Image 1 (cartoon, helix red, strand yellow):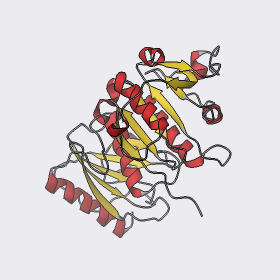
Image 2 (tube, rainbow, N blue to C red):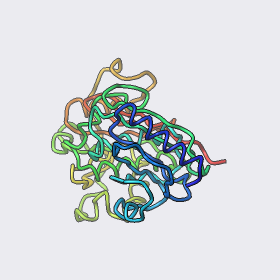
Image 3 (cartoon, rainbow, N blue to C red):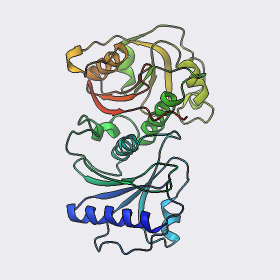
Length: 298
């Protein structure tokens, strides 16, 4: 780790110590290595590692005597994201995975993934609504769906929003959890393309399912998944309605449907906007996270 990046990380830990923060989150992709030569504060502050292109194991990093003590590692979607989007996605995944708790203060240190340097320290107080957290429902995601399932669906949604299908934008909804009630409040618009397949073939963690989902995302309607990650159907019409006044201006029928179904069930909905490529997470009828599409490669 070069002197500039070492300095930024030390400053992040210094800020964390002053604020009595609960964790420091480091985006590792800009770094050439994790060897940290500077002295850390006395209070051992948990360090969470983020990466979209590197594979890290906390135990392995700690065993290499880098000077850092990693408590957990979060894998980000393999796409370009703005610094703010990195922080938003990481906050969402850390809360849903129970790496941080509601009410925690977290210090992020990030930079451009291909720039070779860290250039931003950002403080997130998870007890407050802000630009990062737009609602209070994030902390309850693990009550509805398994963290690894939520992470897989969110990462997939962000990748689909970024890459689209055959170069064209994608707009769709993923509804996770409370599937029996979700199915009661919705109806099939087309023949269910997932009917007749074994559960393991329909599981969101199945390695060969991503391209199938990409193709079916062109269908009108939503994907419905169990809390265990099995896809039950695609092309599902969500009939639950909600007042438009309860949502931010400019959101269309897809977002109204996502808000409606989550207002009447315990489900979580992840909606991709076809027009903007932004991803929004809905819980209890409200937007709890808004992730903007990253910069387009030139």
